[in-house]
Structures are given as structure tokens and as C-alpha cells.
Length: 90
Image (tube, helix red, strand yellow):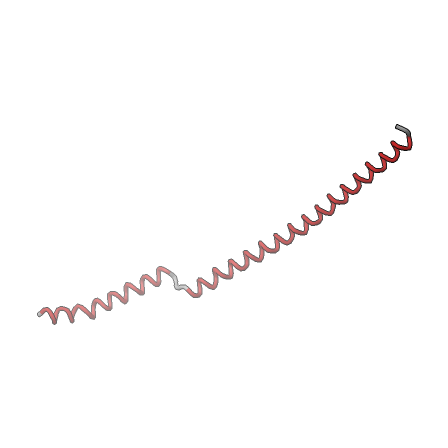
């Protein structure tokens, strides 16, 4: 090969390397932007999940308290029904 041919091949190879480096740098920049967006979306999702949990806690009564109220209502109903049942049995 002549010196000129090697020089052309070298320039082409160098240009190709530069293009690849440029493409890599652009891909890395896009990846960083995507990572930032994912981080923002994860933070927003966490905040929304916390808000949903807070609203559910407001809407749904405490399970133990609800069970206690139900048991009290059942005891009151039983107390009201027992005298009626004993009168009708007599």
C-alpha cells in the first residue's frame, strides 16, 4: 500500500472512532436523562403511595376499633332480644 492509501485509511479509521465516541457520549447523556426521569417518577410514585395510604386511613376506620364497636352493638342487640325471647318462650 502506498503512503497516501494508508493515510486515507488512517483518517477514515480515526473519523469512524470519533463518530463512535460521539454516539457513545450521546447515548450516555440520554441514559443520564432517563435515570433522572426514573428517579423523579419513583419519588412521585412514593409520594402518591403515601398519600393513598393516608387517605385510606382516613376513610377506613381502625380495624380494632371497628371490631370493638361491632361487638358492643351485638351485645346491645343480644341484651334487647333476650328479654323478648324469654317472654315469648314463657
